[in-house]
Amino acid sequence: MARYTGASCKLCRREGQKLFLKGQRCYTNKCAIDRRPYAPGMHGQQRKKISEYGIQLREKQKAKRFYGVLESQFRRYYEMAIRKKGVTGEIL
Image (tube, rainbow, N blue to C red; front, side, top):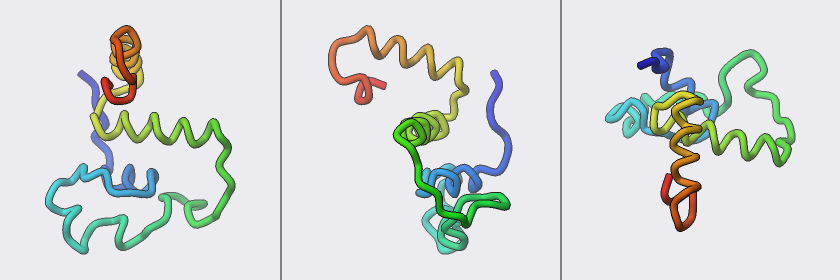
């Protein structure tokens, strides 16, 4: 099974909130989101207006990263959640 093995603190910074991917380190003042509260990369400190599609994409990416699954796995879980009764986000 494939999985992301890169810097997990970078994922938290991209989402703009703590995802607690490093466990105990996220509770200390060494957490990367506390040290640098902006997105990673050369253009991370720039502020830009996010579209409606961008907001939806960020939420999807956040859920994928929180559970540690890739796109095809996430899509399968989403299709299974749609088929069940109830709110899809809660079932997912």
